[in-house]
Image (cartoon, rainbow, N blue to C red; front, side, top):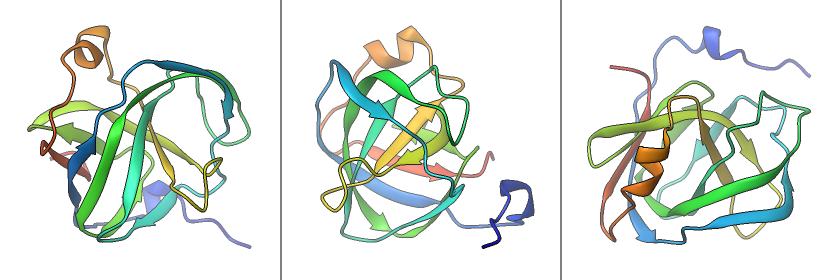
Length: 137
């Protein structure tokens, strides 16, 4: 089966949603493993979890430590692509580095990394915060 490279995704509209649950805190023992897919459809009215796993470098790697950032409900569905910016309250939190299905069929993890800093993780989320996942403006 052929895989779509993020470089081949010419244009796509952003995924938008709102924070519906705040988790916070670090987890261990889950072993996040990015899927081989670099593009995933995020559907309206579904809930996804944003997790930070800074040590991930791509499909086939495993990260035993991660930080759960929170859950968001998609309001406008679209595709999310590895490399897309993740914005919360209008500020770039980081970028999509992969997707993990270890909690499917309950929910999919959207893995965030790249530009994430300790300060970004510390400022936290509020219920109802707007989440936008899409190409760099």
